[in-house]
Image 1 (cartoon, rainbow, N blue to C red):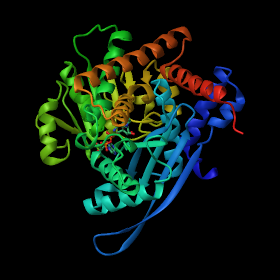
Image 2: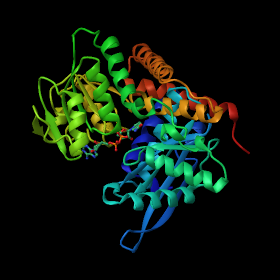
Image 3: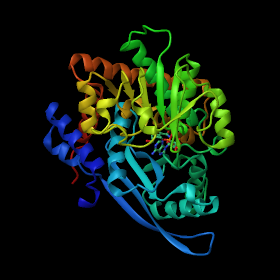
Image 4: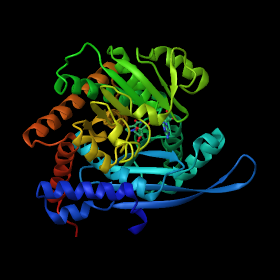
Length: 418
Ligand code: NAD
């Protein structure tokens, strides 16, 4: 298993061991959770538009399935490797467990730059990837979803390829697909909405709602970042800075998010928005604010910049944006960190609703979906918040304690085969 030993994966393994020791969990069960249950690496030869054939590498990793079928997104990014996908798969196990969903954890990815591929190339790449991992996925086995660089359209192609192979329509094989082919209302905005609900839970439970509005900085303005910004803006808070891969913008009086969304529709980037000054992604992270919400990639707050962070609370919209060294530095500065397995779980909650609706062929109203999302996010937040007080610990430790204990219990009850 040495191929997966990246920094990101080793960090997740250390977290698991730390929580196992802290809670005195059965060492044999922790040992079983240290590596993914199943990994697949596939070669993806694609006919490019210029007639050449190019080979990409794809991955699918199932970390654990003790509590149900594996669940996790598919990332299209040039940094994707087995270590990153394995680390993210483990995080999915903890996230689904913390939310008490009947799923285990998985993740997938293709090492590519989706911005450099035409729509036709992306479709051929997605369909070939689906056919190569076909034996591993399915509504009862492993259910992919979008992640960085993939989207609803990608999920539509996966569902179509899978359904064609089996000879009938199987919408439950993926979540995050278009509503017209079995997607769920509310899924598109679910993760960002969940991040906003979590921020509001922090305001009420940690900051005692002592100000009329709070200053918020958001890194990454894709699915998660833009929806979190929209919900928080609508709640009356001031979004003072946002960014994307090209750079950021700042306005200490607050950015009008509705206007910014119109600007992005035209220009595809936040840069150049009126009433704002440009800033770099590095400068954005160290702005003075109440909430810093990283919603782009992992490992953006590290030992190199953690000391300069001035936010009161960091809410992890992205997966793994704070390294473990940075975690310690932030905690020593009394900055609270709400871990991604709690803060960005809105997506997997509504994915769960989508899967249930697909299987039952019975679809719910958006109002019902968003109400249930808010309820489940609040329930998990309260459980974690209570444990931080009881155990005098931080939010990441408390969240992992709840999540890992549930998975360990499921493994203990099922026993070890054979
Ligand atoms: P996305 O592709 O829609 O958006 C990513 C955003 O980050 C874009 O604005 C992009 O320009 C920006 N970005 C990329 N590289 C950057 C860089 N180096 N510096 C600054 N900005 C950069 O992706 P998304 O779906 O919004 O996912 C964002 C994060 O949230 C990821 O870590 C993902 O794993 C996590 N997440 C997503 C979901 C979901 O439902 N989409 C659910 C849970 C967690």
